[in-house]
Length: 289
Length: 289
Image 1: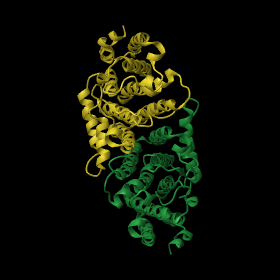
Image 2 (image 1 turned 45 degrees about the vertical axis):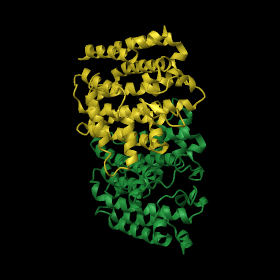
Image 3 (image 1 turned 90 degrees about the horizontal axis):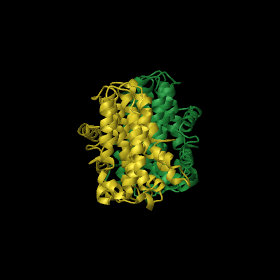
Image 4 (image 1 turned 180 degrees about the vertical axis):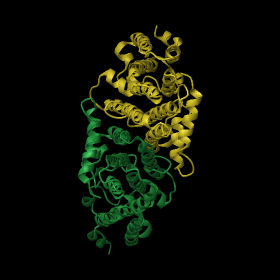
């Protein structure tokens, strides 16, 4: 999952295409703040890696699909941080969008990013419109209702929710979409990539839950202990921290075993193992001992 | 601009396609409340009327484009009503979404509706994917940055804004998109329809400003006098009420003169005149005398 520089330039071009003199300056700045500097860009890198594993490592359609998914991820962070949800003061080590620009521009920046995501996808697929319909369906299903990230967040408003449903929708869905879209963008069948994306997304969520317990705020760039404080379901709470670490390792192995037969499977396997190290470094898991 | 029943059934099918057992019940109910029962559905009726004027009154692609624009309009109403913006208690004679379901589900319902809009467009254009790229660009540009309804709303966060820019972006943009998309959906060139949509959208906004001053809350199903209370730019404030009524009539005539040469131009002209009566009935304008 390399290509970080490429994804940054695709994201920069997408955001720049809707800024400029005509745009209300506050909105343009809030959107900029929401997308740059980014996090690990793991979802678009996954999308591009799957496109590469399917035999096309330089697909502009996969770049656009990956960027679209990252923009939707950024939108969800901005809205999840709002006072009515997590009321988070910081994100990626800086003030959250609503703290820096106010609640109104945070609502609007999230909205604008959702629109920009679909626009980016359509522009990127302009040369291959036959791929746009399935790609858009994949990305929209992972974002909206009944089971995308918006639905996942909405489970926080219900009296009860199963941990696996909540996590699959809130986090897993964009990972699954990234894997499936990576294949669809280069004209391959996305379905066989679903299980791989599911397992990897679940592993990522479990790692996030563990970091929320074990890490210090300065490691994360955001507050820690939020799951417990907000009574949110969490793998660390369900399995205990060491149980959650074992669960994470199993999920990484499951994801690797779920990689469909393809030209670049060995390389993809190696990348997933590297990514697992990055997600849950040994110096962190040692704190659980 | 008839076809109200058809647009309701397209909207019902779109919303039902993402509800169902899997969906968090609160989110499903909030989205239902945001879309049904609707207002005049003027934007999708405009889209379908233009498709009809271009020679195809029964285009499922135009139906989908119209529904997509109406869903985006509903999303913007839900977010504009939020406590951080208008803090509106009522909409269409019923509690606003955030009053009925809470602020969190109002944020998420708006987000889900934006996603559903693009999904509806893609599904409707699946049989004509060559039309999807320009249609999606038209709809996205009217919604997001730099000059769509989200940008229009963001001007409320700036110290200064020109009335015409604010109104074109906040209201006009979806009218323009409805006219242009109606043509694009049936394979016609959208560009000649832009001026017609612009003028009609401007007329609609001026009528809305006038009603905000002259009507009673029970006529509107929402509070009156909000523009003045919120220090929002308004045509009634800029031109005075009688000046605004003259301005409205000029804009309706301008829109009719801007109808491009097409098979159904006479019928479209008659529909616009009827719509103008509905927007600003004589019993209302008499109150200004």
